[in-house]
Image 1 (cartoon, rainbow, N blue to C red):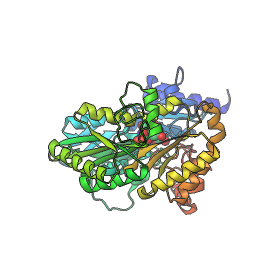
Image 2: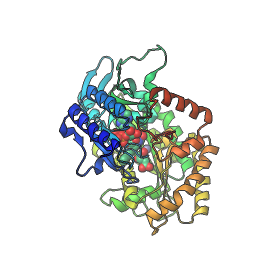
Image 3: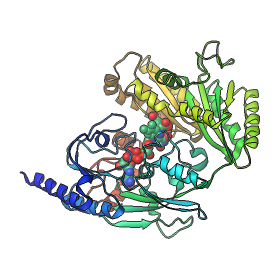
Image 4: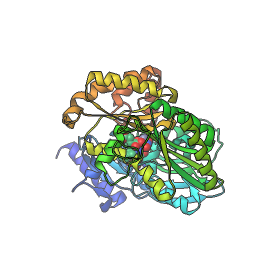
Length: 491
Ligand code: FAD
Ligand code: 2HG
Ligand code: ZN
């Protein structure tokens, strides 16, 4: 046995002693931990370690630090940028937070909930709802992503237009540092100007600065009514105009505004034929849509949350849609009459990533541009891509209310998706990100950097900002033990 091998064997034994044999996995099928959600990469862990509380997390980090072994924190492993799996060397410990899943307390007077990092988002939403409160973070992965992962990626989702990103929902954190110390910052304070706000360093740091073990988060009184509408619009410009009207008419009641291009919706129709997707070419329900027999080029899902009553919310929605139709920015619309209908309309939107995955490997661009400039960005970039690769299929949808598009690219019909990815990801990314930069946008609105976008970050972020990020990483994790090679390169 080489020195390194015996160090690893010793570490496995130490980890077993710390968290129990059953919670250190080294054999069997570890795909769920070692492969990313998009099936872009497969890593290999020295061990998958599943501590059960914060003290055990601290002990695991200390033991790994002593052995010079790096760790990759992982929650639900739903991340989009290959940040939550080990590399392929078999030398990293995969630190799963899934067993830290308790809701520690709900403070209804302070409007906060304190929850452990491994708690699944949907579990937290449901627990808050039972108490009469709303935890507003909402995304299609909510049945498996965890609060720790949401914080580590500063996840966005579909309610940002009203409630902000995960960062805005967080009032305090508990973190295990790279040295294995525990920082207890679960204050629940709304005002605290006592120096640097460390919470904001850890949020969005993708497991590279510390391991989040718990958080204190904002909750809100449940609205009296949440209504959903689904509208066909004649263009992206019209969708932006509709957004403006929705802000005016609904004000803070506007809690969701998502846009979906027709090709994205056609993938939902193709892969989930049981779903009834309104306003398609094949449905008779879009009498005014584009030319006869054509689907509307874009559809929008909007949500109005009202603290008065359902009738009030419905009347507001009607006035908004009437005004929008008068101005020609809505072709046709439906307003859900029941919760089940509302869920079905949202389900269409949430099915797009899964439908796209079923269509085959693809190139994702999670970009942010000022809302007003999005139509011009799309016209320009669509044309450049069609010129570069005629027939390339653009899956364009996302959180228009936040200026965040998922401007994804699928291989031309019939082309081999794997070969497309290998050959075209580089050139296509270069085309898209060059336009994003010209429009003063961001190459990652909500998914983060992980390892997939690390090189692009180095190219598109200012050297001053990158220098400061490196200095912070070095100060908090001088031996590069936490998720090395993610966000920033290793050296
Ligand atoms: P993981 O995937 O396990 O980890 C993500 C990153 O966080 C990794 O770098 C990991 O090392 C780090 N990390 C995880 N837990 C911790 C911890 N406790 N401490 C420190 N670091 C940690 N994202 C959005 O923003 N908006 C969306 O609308 C959205 N929709 C999605 C829809 C689908 C179908 C899928 C599959 C993903 C979607 N995502 C979305 C991407 C993803 O970021 C979120 O699902 C979620 O925030 C990741 O949580 P997770 O627990 O799965 O984290
Ligand atoms: C969404 O908004 C997610 O559905 C996933 O952020 C985006 O798959 C994608 O590109
Ligand atoms: Zn998204």
